[in-house]
View 1: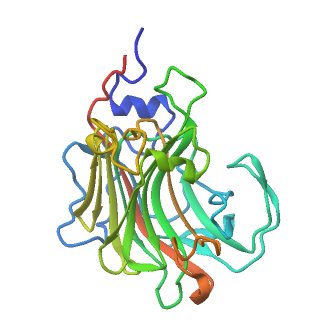
View 2 (view 1 turned 90 degrees about the vertical axis):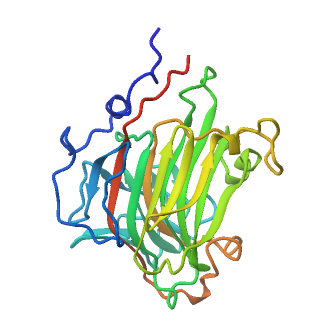
Length: 318
């Protein structure tokens, strides 16, 4: 029987519904990007599939989130928290009440929240497997924003498509996170968990979360993630700042404490997201930063987003 993973990445995108406005030769050429000295936008082994300049909201690619970040957030994602116009995506945290109500994203009732915030996500019909993810983004000004999280990441919490045990659910997440409490650093994360529905349940699989000093993140910076079957790399303004290999995660010959279980490189199609939110009082001094200096609205800006599909071939698994 043919294995569903024995095809190229281009076929994978079609199988999982991730079509694009791009032609087979790539997106229509657009004006030169604002970026960093030496930026070419070309990478060996990758083909540009999405070139998003945020001139207007594109409902063929994007949807607005309506959930919240677990129990850690003080805000709920709302439509008004995502503004796309004049070549900029703005994710906005506002001091306004959000009543309790049903979340389509989470398929459950949500409590009332004292703040609104914004999340942009690729549509559920568009799933991506391996590639390079880039965004030019800027955190809120440190003088007016002391407690927040702004992000660029992949996220999936679904049954493991490669498992013979259909009930097994994997948490797979690769992050760039900017924090109000660390305005000269960003956090590069791999979060993985098997049958984990809460963040704490992912800890036995390794806490692959590094806070890396890169200079001001409330200035425009280009953050990128290269996600391949055997490794993940994080870049800031073209500089490689972190790399994880399979050998770092697989507990062979033994796990390195505090990890107790092996973790794979994420290997399932995923959604790509950008969001901005504020932490609750319990976690803010450890993650996100203390909110006492926030002046609302807080605005995280994104100048552009690019997704490059990986041109390699996914190996068969049986």
